[in-house]
Image 1 (cartoon, rainbow, N blue to C red):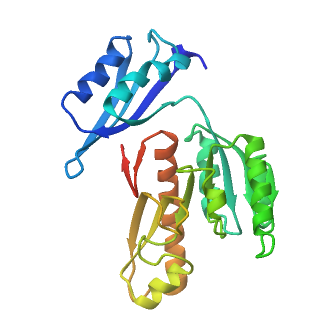
Image 2: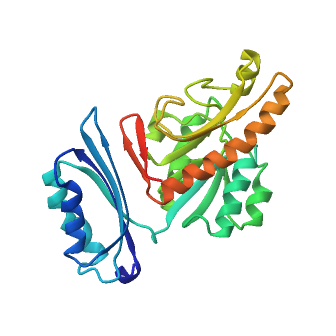
Image 3: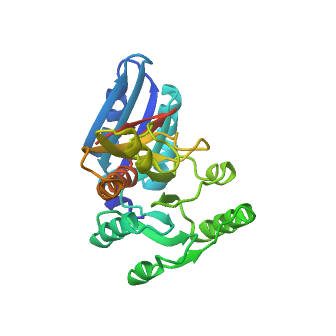
Length: 287
């Protein structure tokens, strides 16, 4: 990477104290960095400070390789959990799908437009139905049929494939398989799912039918990080749409598809632009 053409992004959380913003800003200023975006939040109950700050490194006096080491002493003093990223560095992404194509089409469309600074390395599926879509974008597809008897074996092959492609983020674009805890632990806060419900309501399978039978007046979609506990990971983005007694189950599914596409797309933008801080079961989103 050319350090003179980079935008650095710091995400940090630590116990709150006086002067944190000043100290972080001064670290950037004294090395001739130009802050272009800064957003912070203090959780008053937990007295926890969080910040996202981005700066132009055009005239920065240390290069990208030295930045992590240079900031480490300050982070240690703050007792901080932190990360440093560069907006220009592309995330390497694998998309997991089954048979439904609406979320995949949305991601690939935005990818083609250059909305995400990512490299989609491969598409993984338990079915071959969506291969023609991937072929249009010249993205390799790898099919791993999953049964109760071969799940562990297939996940091992999938992990080997992801390592081969050096994937750092997995997107579950309506992948209708539950990933095992052994799989999930390899990608903490790096597997993003779209659930066709406003979690925590109607978790698990067939949420639209559950919502229809319950007679709810709104339905929703939720994008979240995948954890070992099904549909309980930190929530990134949600949205809802109103329905009425006139809507059939098919209407709910149709309206839900639109929500799923947009909610997942927004969550991916937050993730790829390094706007998410995960704290326990919650997220802080710096919009």
